[in-house]
Each structure stands twice: as C-alpha cells, then as structure tokens.
Length: 353
Image (cartoon, rainbow, N blue to C red; front, side, top):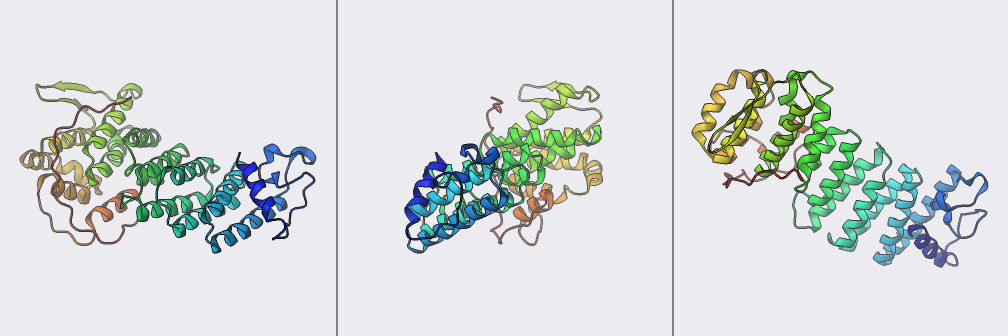
C-alpha cells in the first residue's frame, strides 16, 4: 500500500533527518486517515501540514542526490495518500513536485510513470484548484518526453473525463479533443448535459463544440462519433425536437426541421467524408445566413475548408491553435506550420460500444 511504502521510506531517514511527527501511533501512518488509530480516528490539520513538509524535504534531498526512483516513489505515495485524505492543496503540491522530478530524471512516458499520474488525476477531490495546474504540468511533461507533441492521448482522456464528471466543460473540451478513441463519447455527453440547461433551439451550438475540435485536429472519425452520440441523445430525450430520417444509397442523414444549424453540421461531416469542395461551397452558401447569426463559427469553417477541401483563406497567426483557443476558451501555443490538406478516406461507422 502507498502508506506502507511511505512509512518504510521515511523510517529509513529518521536517523539522518529529524522527524517533526509526534503522533500517538508508530511510524508515519498519519498520511492515510483511514489507517490511523488516533483519538476520534482523525488527523489534525497541523499534522497533515507537517507530513507534507517532511515529505517535501526528504524528496528534495533524494532528487538532489539523483536518487530519482526513491524521490518519485515517495512523492507519488505521499501525494496519493494526502489526496485520498481530502488534503487537496498539500497533495496537489506534491503531485506537481512529482512531475517536476520526473522531468529532471529523464523518465519517459512508460507504463509505470503514466500509471502513477493517471492514479493521481483520479484521486483529486472535486474542483480542487491545484488539479488544473497538475494536469497542465503533466501534459507538458508528456509532450516533451513522449511521441505526441500535444501530449499523451491517454493522459488527455483521463484528465478530460475527470473534468467532464465535475462539469468543467471548458477544461473537458481542451483535453478530450486530444484524447483517445473513447473521448468523443465523453465529450458529446458533456456537451449534451450543458445543452439541456439552455434553450432547445441551441442544440447545434453545443454539438459544434464536440465536433469542430476533432475536425480541427484532423480526426474525422471522432467528429462523426461525437455527432452521432449527441444527436442520438437529442432524439431519445428531447421529444420537442422533431427529426426525419433521409436515406440514400450512399448515406443516411437526420434532418431537424426546426434546427437548420444542426442539419448543417451533419451535412458538413458528410462533405468532409466525401472530400467534395463543390459540395462544401454549396453547403456554406445555403446556410450562410444561419451561420452568420451564430457569429463565432467563421474561423473554424475557414480552417476546415482549407484542411479538407483545399480552399485557401488568408489568415494570420496560428490557425489551428488560435481557432481552438477562441472556441474553447484557452490560448494558442507557439506558431505552427500551416496545416496541410487532410486526405480523408471514408471512415467506418462509429462504434458506440
């Protein structure tokens, strides 16, 4: 157990470093209140603070001597125990320190390191402020040492799913858009839960937040899956929104008589799947008045036109990151080369399982 590991590591330091702990029970079991036998089975706030400071001191000395594995194990166990005890600030601080030590140690995104970080993400108390900084540092580390320049997809998925569960949609969006094949379902569900708090005719605005990010990173399969999940939930739970199924030899399309922008999104996905610039131009012209009313889709559609249909539109700055930033509420990164046209083969049907 994490607590037992902490006890063993700290115990080995007792002769070298004076311990500030003065608990009634032996060793350092105060890090996990579920395993203590103190009066009233509780640990005072001051004792948690002392535990946090002692672990920081010892971990710093391990790191200074380049005993990376010991420092990582100590910080991981301490952060996890404190988080499980509801000490989000102290546990989050050790978790951030852990990522810093991982970076200095030269550790890559191997199964062991990633597993530790995923476990910590799940252990944070809901809406703990240090969680966002930890996730940012974790993703940044994975982008430096891993194969994915925008961060490890599994780390993005677990972080985004966690934010979605806490109904933090902006944070959920920025991570689930770069996650795994399971991320579109989480993002679509998050956007739908957000939508049902708004007016029925705003469905397309929330569906777009689950679709555009995937299109902007060249992930048409996930964009289609997000669209299918969002509209399926809309059809099953919102009886006030009528829908018609239109089928042809090549495709099936859901038509919403009172939601023209939702129709636009479905047809946009069909156009990108076919790679037809003529179809895209016709679509953009037909729905131009409705898109103009939204007022915030222009840049996204310009970028999609360039990526999927080769329609060059003069732009300045960082197209991909600026667009995702304006859509989802976060800033762009360093300048990137202009994206190339995406060659999209017809994807298989989205798997909802």
